[in-house]
View 1 (cartoon, rainbow, N blue to C red):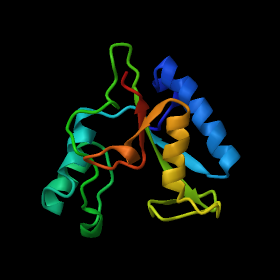
View 2 (cartoon, one colour):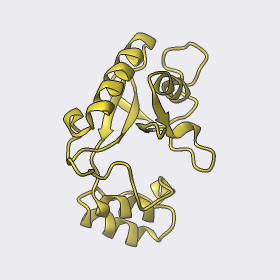
View 3 (cartoon, helix red, strand yellow):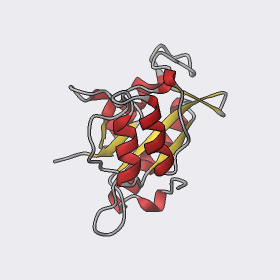
View 4 (cartoon, helix red, strand yellow):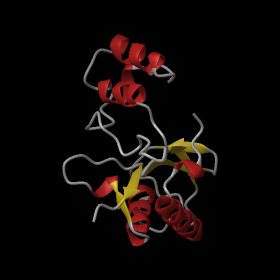
Length: 154
C-alpha cells in the first residue's frame, strides 16, 4: 500500500509536517516509504537475515512485497510487533523514510552527506526528528533502524 500521511495519528501528522519542513530547510530530500504495515509484511521483514532467501521471498510474496536478492537478505527489524500496525482508530504511530540522492534515487548509505554539511544525512534526519518530538530508530541502543520514526513514548 502506498504510504499516506492521513494513516498517521493526528499527533504524528503534526510532527511529520514539522519534520518534513525541517528536512527541506536542511536540504535533505526524502521519501515517505511506510506508514501502515500488516503482520504479514512485518513477518517477512523479520525473516530477512534470519532465514534462507527462498523462505524470505516466499514470505515477501505472500505479503505483497517484491522479492529480494541474497545480498539484500539482511536483518532489517528486531521485532515481529510494530508501531506501524494500525491502532484502534486504524492509524499508525510510526513512519519510515528513505533519503534521496539527486531528489530521486533512494540511498541507504549511512555515510551519505548529500547536503555537504559534514553530517551524514540519516544522522541529521534523526537529529531533526528528535528536535520535533519524534523518537528516531537511528538512536536506539540495541538495534539501529535509521529509516524509522515514531511517536515518542512518554
